[in-house]
Length: 140
Image (cartoon, rainbow, N blue to C red):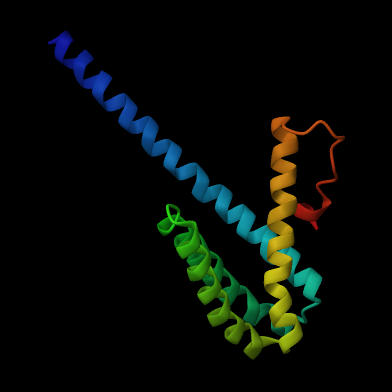
């Protein structure tokens, strides 16, 4: 009886560990999404009304972007094409909320945020030898 319990425990334990690991990126993705949204809103100088209309559209865009990235990870060119198509579609939705110039800048600020976030992650991992940069971009 003890052997059966031990065997059962040995097989179930890795399964629970794997499930626990899958939940963590979702929490991190939510934090990143929130900070990116706040960063872009601040850079664009959105009014309160624009912010209320922008937030749900950006959340949908962010989720579709992540899903597109995950689905097309194996083929970089297809992934880039799908992301361009996604951005063109959402540019139209952003234009309904704000003027055309700011709607186009959403993606520029998104790319800037991603680049800065990657730099900070690399610094935290010790992959860079230069002094640490400010984390202000993620906290603004």
